[in-house]
Image (cartoon, rainbow, N blue to C red):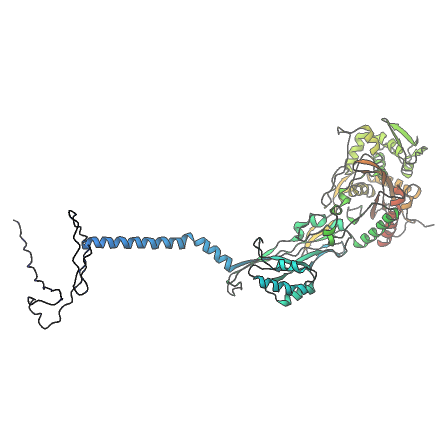
Length: 638
């Protein structure tokens, strides 16, 4: 059964005239009341009643065109409003995402740059000292002046340059102005105004309190003894790098490890009192103590330089060592340089010739030939032969330095007269196989292992090499066709002086930090090369060579000094020259040597012989060493 719902009766409307007043047909109850204000009605087609009810008639629709009506239901209006709010909310979400997520890391990086500063704390470079603790290399403060001109105006830059001019009179005014003026091509805002300024000038700049100007005071390496031991020590440049000598070899230990200070600052660069601070202390460099004795070093350099000047030599070298341990006591070469002035020095002088330059040792090598002959048993000091002054072997004429031969020439006399023919006679008795094996045991052709950079192993051919010839063997017996370094030769002859033991030469005594010894060098025995008896027999022959032979200018009265002179041809650019290398090596006291001395002169102008140039210098050094070590004479002095 269907249900019928009646429409509610229509409510009578008040008629409104064009003047907006009620007509007489207005609903009852209206009398005496204020006429109601009429609501403005808006047509979506543009027909709008004014505020007081008047309206313009709507435009007539074109003929044949249907009239559209945009009257929306309440439900549709709600949906449109909800959609608009949704879109608006989505836009806000996207913006928040961009700010909080995408820009997060950029904001954090910016905050760190503006609020956190990391300052490097430099480490102090370690000292280098001699065996007695005398400082050979230390540190001093230098002063560098910098400008930060990026935020300065042109007028400010000119004023600052004018203020600096009288404070830094050595710097041209245009250079000053350039350094305090910002240029778009500048890689940073930290420009050097002046370097290595003295303390007085730096303090004046600080007192002037100039805008954008700072004074920094890094340390600089200084060498209080100037050129002494320069090629051994090396140097540290203005950038803090070291490439030569002890400085270069032990750079990692000497320079230490820088620290850092990580602290928060405000936007103006002021430290935040309660801000985060992280401090990593610097670890200062270690101190290195050498075996070199400065007192001996100064004496050796003085005597070596005097001999160099007396004979007009181009080069001079000397080593004093302890043959019992291998410790180097003095280490000199000329020409040298002042490491404080490295920036104006010829780089060729930076190399250490005592470990890197090789030369033919000449007759000093006969010491090894004689020791091998004695140790193999093929000869004794009194073994004799009639030997000529010259002989021809393998098509080559080989002579003594004076071309004089001797009848009944003994092994001892071979050393006294420095006979080349006699050295070949001894070598032929034991042959090349034994000869080269012994030389290898003496360390010839090998690195010594001394704690220095750029050491050379020398030039050494044996009968196992393709380019070797039997003539090499004969010439090697008197120190030609073989090349050694001065350090290498000292180590080899020390093995005769100390009873046959090859010791590794060393120049670093210990490494320490804050009073604690980190490393200490102990004498290192390499091998027994010849027997103690053979070494003593060879030493006795060398004492005779000093007292009675060509090495007599090295003799010190009242003492037993064992030694040998040597002279070899100087090769320049791989070619034989008219000049020579003269040298002498000696050790004393012969029976229990405290020291061994090698002196070498290159390209002397007055005399070519090592017996005339180097031997007297060895004698002067040896005599003073007896006094320094308070060694009493062992023989009566006539």
